[in-house]
Image 1 (cartoon, rainbow, N blue to C red):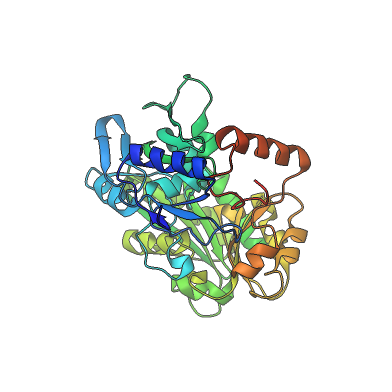
Image 2: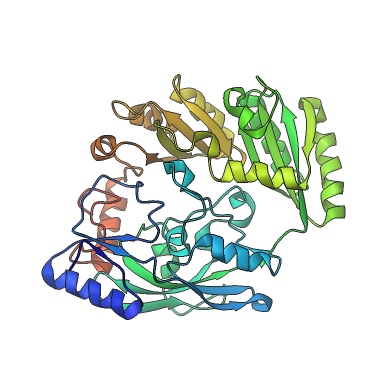
Amino acid sequence: MSDALKPRDGKDVEAVVQRAVAEGKTLEVVGQGTKRGIGRAAQWDLSLDLSDLSGVTLYEPDELILSARAGTPIAEIEALLAKNNQELAFEPMDYGPVFGAAPGRGTIGGTLGANLSGPRRIKAGAARDHFLGFTAVSGRGETFKSGGRVVKNVTGYDLCKVLAGSYGTLAVMTDVTVKVLPRAETEQTVLILGLDDAGAARAMSAAMNSSNDVSGAAHFPAPIAANLQAESGRSITALRLEGVAPSVAHRRRALEALLKPLGEIAVLEEAASRDAWRVIRNVMPLAGGPRALWRISVAPSRGHEVAAAIGEGAEYFYDWAGGLIWAALPAEGDGGAAQVRASLNGGHATLVRAPAAIRAAVPVFEPQEPGLAALTKRVKESFDPKGVLGPGRMYAGV
């Protein structure tokens, strides 16, 4: 075996895993490597590069389903869907820029393996909610399938939910099937300028609890609001409306009337709105820098409290109506781990970007209580009893 292996099809993947089991080797599973920096700083014997397992194998626009090999770039899939006015409704982020790499290289397998979702998560759900089926090779070297081509499936355990978010540590997906949805005809974004974090939380809550069907709610505090071309020194709260043009116009007026008492209102038209939400989705204000980057998920009503508790030294902004905080802290010591985890009191935090020394010293993913940790270990042993696939990437000893 060489240090990097590039299988051509599912049979090759099965053969590689079987040989790794027989020789006691460990495998790192990668597509284009855009999420390679996420996880504990563990070492593996070989890299299983799935980039040659690429291409859409089935697309039925009328049935709203698409199947593709795991190494297929998301950009290729999104371009194909756009030709039919469809999209991946969970709006996956692109991790490439976060690590200082070029955008557009993430794959569908990596997206599902990391359970990625963007700003539309508050309306459409996460990647796992659109994940219908797959073919994969377990850590035993056995090919298996799960799910199908419909949302409601009663063929057994919903293994799509198990593999989503497992970062390639349970099985190597070779083919996947996802649900796609029609793309909105147009969109606009209502902006509120100058709110503090607590005021923004109230505004986003009011918008989300209204009948205006908001599909994105984010807040940029003043120090980094310039990334959305806001006026210098003013914070910006962004609320996205999507749909057919008459509906968007009607809901925009209703939202403006609801929020006008809270602050100055502005509106981004379609092109500017799409650009703004691409910035939010791909965490561009905090992309490519040297600081440790945390992804913090909490109850939306508590987001501003958690950010305040993290304290000085943090740059941050909010997505998911305050329920998702992207926070950058100095990449020294523990990378802010003690600050972040002490501030949570519920919720969870993932250290997305940090030097290897920090990722080796602190838990990257949220520490699990003993019962859940024992379950996680049993699931790992069921799929990968020899610990071949990315051992230690998510949790020490697992």
